[in-house]
Length: 169
Image 1: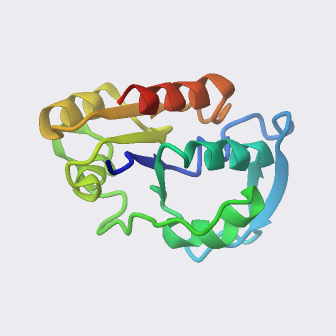
Image 2: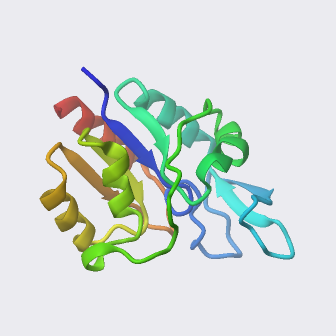
């Protein structure tokens, strides 16, 4: 049987960018990065928890890991090595931040295209009830949409929920 996909956003789930600026979240290290899309005068501040790499590698027993981020393939250069992850496939969004059907997040339609009917779990900080409804109506396979608080990032209960969901398939 083919493993379900685990579609991973970076900013929010792995980089709790909305945490209080003056306080790095516990367990996270600060990195300065300049990916291609970054246009700021100074490198982008990214907080990453190295333990998340171990958690994701453990989930790779049950899932095929895929970047589902605006970092696209650059997540393999900037994020993955800092978490100890191997190079992962990524969704090459045809359009970013564009129009989306029925109030959904712009990524949702492309997530379904990428999944091509396969079961998937998706972690992102922009998932809404509209996305849940859209996926339920348009995707016939099992799907877990896990909204992550962009001030906190992925937590132990999130990793547990992902493992339990995959085990239940």
